[in-house]
Length: 441
Image (cartoon, rainbow, N blue to C red; front, side):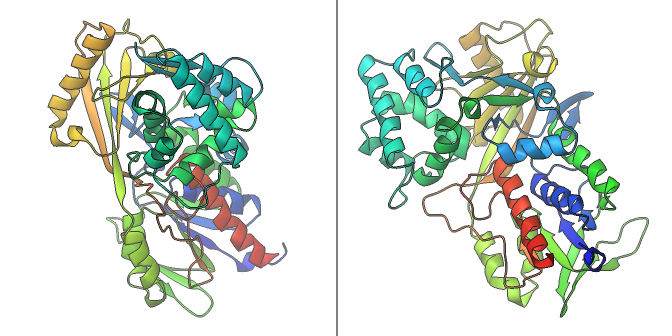
């Protein structure tokens, strides 16, 4: 591309979608500048420190079908087998339910796993298997979107089967209650994870924090390709001109407000930040209102540091009818022995509790359910109140393009097959980069 010198792309936001776009553009020899308002990269998937222990602001599970995410991690120097603990498909609710897929080709591994699942009657296991076969026959596509609960009811899944299998899976995948969750989006996840290669259903649990996993490596990659990544650099305004975009950044203690010109801008900031920036641009006012109307769901992560000898029966374990929905043993996953992360997804009664009381209740559940008698040495509750968009029926999601050809939007909330996942974020960022590259070629 001999005319690349005429292009300079600004990316607002150094989360997974923004850094994915930056890597793809940098690889094509397009100069990029990433503006990240926070001190560290990663957005809603970032590392944090507490009591000199490295944590994440929330737990994220990758699946083997997240091909775009895994490819980009490798592109910037990651090693998938070293960076993750790979767990073949296994869903366990302690003392209530267990599905463990045998080593068979997909989708036989899932069907065999469903037919041998513990905690269900034979009739329930058969109904679950028939449901998956029915989804396969319709190619995981519905004539019109309905709620996950309605879809399950139509296929006769029953209360117990829904509670032990499909509801935990839906909450984990979509972070949205089943009575309002989009069945079509859930089917996209089931299609890609359970109906492709057997390895596509593997669960990948990161051994390192989410900032180190991709954004930090992506930063070095971008810098090696003539790009720039600026932390604590907040964009205050977007001003379109005839053939370029002017960005105004917030003044800092070291500098006054700065104005910079770019050929293209990818807004990969949070929905709130995107609305703030777009509302002042007349051509983007309608898309700003569409973004502002998107509902959100919270995720709470309760970290409990126990004595080092404390461990769970599995690296990842579900609980039934408890505050804590999923437990992660960070000792088995990342060598942080005694550290347990409890995840609570979507709206619920836990939001009415003070963090101190919520941590106490989760610790009490670990005692009652798992017999952990030791008291936590410390706890930390991280509440992401707008962790994901609420993946509801027929939810209007903005496209990655806007009324201005050289301003694009990246983020897991933009239009696509997936719910609010790292894969959705990465796909969105790459799509923006490819759109820009298509105008150059």
